[in-house]
Length: 247
Length: 287
Image 1 (cartoon, rainbow over the protein chains, first blue to last red):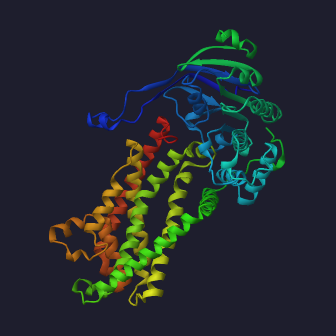
Image 2 (image 1 turned 180 degrees about the vertical axis):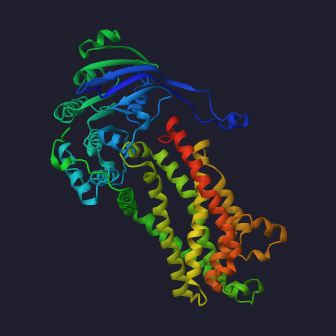
Image 3 (image 1 turned 30 degrees about the horizontal axis):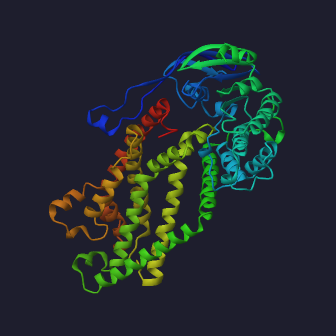
């Protein structure tokens, strides 16, 4: 069986939009900003890889490239046998990019309505979308809060709803960006346990998790890759994170 | 891989038209659920709509009190004349702004990334908003005409349904073409583009939205012929107020056909280019 993720020489450079002053000087774009440089990695089937690094290290950019949302500037990445530059509907069914961003939900709607909407984006008819939403809300422990407005959800509940949304397509690979960001220690522990036991291990899924929390990487990861300013700085088993980081 | 539970199996990929319909229904449900959470705002919007129709009616009573030679070729009823002007203007604004607005709102609200991470084709995500807005605009137009008819006795005794059925899609097609160019430009330069504002102002001044373009000096009238709105109004007013046949409207039909024929393929190609660029830049998911 080939590796679910096989990326070689990935580079990504952003070109921020020009300011009005730039436009007046005849420049259509600002100076390029390199986000990733020559990043190569492989992830084995069923492996949980944590990407660690400070803010701005390039974790989110790499996750978005692996999810087929961003196209790399250089290099190539094959995910589940598909080149990410050619990610299509079939690819997105097999890969879940769990977007924890709170703004990605409709705040006036309930958790159930939000999930039913995304169910339609997955191609479900209205009745199956509602059934799927109900089943997933049950699984992530939000059944009782299903008909409450998203705006009343706690941070932990929002992250759980984001996980439920990621599972709408029954994916083989799960990509998560800082899944416990902003949670209190107990809430973070509970969510990690749920992620590890119910979402990843129970279904034998492969996962890549971006985090800058050593406790998270230790709890979830089989292997940790360190990123810094867009470069891979090394890798280690989770129990050696502190030594690698010099903590 | 087998899913954890059979009821969580992913659906088979539906045909594109069915997928589009499902997303459109879900989008409409979401918008209605969101709106129902803001009841006061909804009531205020309905009230302001009714007030604008009332104001128009009283204004038209004043204008219509005297015999107006400029309106003679439109049947002499100013309210009927101006309601058509405003409805067509509404469709122009919708065609020109809805796609660009949908993209900008989704970028600002942070919704796009989560939507584009699902299997749904990008064209469906982008088009449901404008289609939903179009359905609303048809409803608004029907309400305008119904209010004008019920409260102020506006009638279209000479209307030609056949001409209207040919003209209306052509008008919408021309406006959609401008909308594609407008949205693509906004995505490429990543700024609000002034096309919509300029077009609205220029059309209001030169196309004969609120007054017949025959009141304009010849130079401005000639400039107005360059705007699709002028031809759209000629077509729709010709169909509804004069019951004109298609051969009698050949000039505006050809003009709008030219606008649609050039702008839709050009706008589509530019938009596809802008989408590709946005995916490389990552600018589709943030502003």
